[in-house]
Image (cartoon, rainbow, N blue to C red; front, side, top):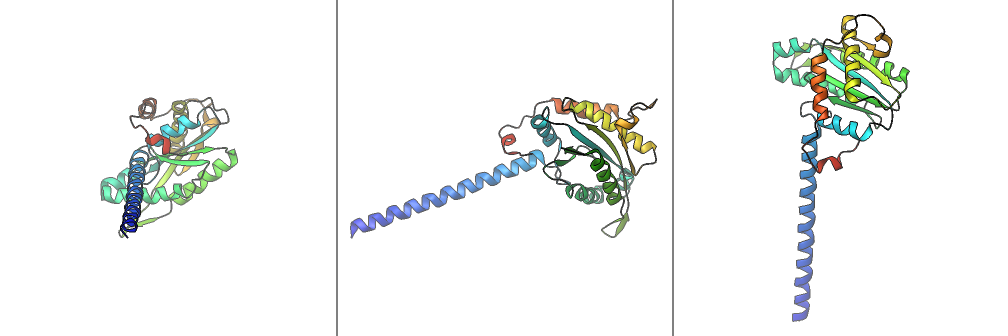
Amino acid sequence: MSISLTALLLIGLTLALWIYTLIFLHSVMMERNLLRKLAYQDPVTGLFNRNALELFWKRSNGKEGFAIMYLDLDGFKAINDTYGHQIGDKLLRRVSDHLLQVTNSNQKAFRIGGDEFLLIMKDYDADQVTVLAELLLQKISAPYNIQGINLQVTGSIGITMHPSPKKTLPSLLKEADIAMYQAKEMGRNCYAVYERIKKRPNVRSYGTARVMKLAACFRKKTKIQGIQQTATF
């Protein structure tokens, strides 16, 4: 009888140890996922952030060509100044939903600034890129109602496409930035393709300093260790 009781105690102790181990491992995984989310996800929009862009580029660069859409919202600053950051953040989330709807294994969306976004496409078709730009512009320009306030913004998109994988991220950002500002000069709520405008005289980037500052951030190595191994692109 005492042997049976001892055996039952051992079985109970073993089960308790297994349960504790499972709970501990679950807690560790949840903590790792939270750290990953904080490291690579923009808290306002749910899109990937600059850290994620850097990691994505490190893992993908040199393997294939890319098309990059550089989206800047027209009229957002006035809305943000008039109605405050709470309304502005909700508007950014609504706009970001349109980007999230077109993300997949070959298309990733990033928020890189206040009202600036990137959509990077791998394995792209040039016609597909421009059709997607038109679709996004149409969706973004639709009216929004946020907390009873009717709002409307548009987008200016700069596009650069490179079948060669040898281009650096800073150079691609600069090209997309030039094209984006060309779209603004064309009247906004439209897109411009860098490859089509680069031979025009006096085409320049009004945001060069901003883009160079952004590019400099990508040259710095991230301080976060371990989490990188769990991020997938």
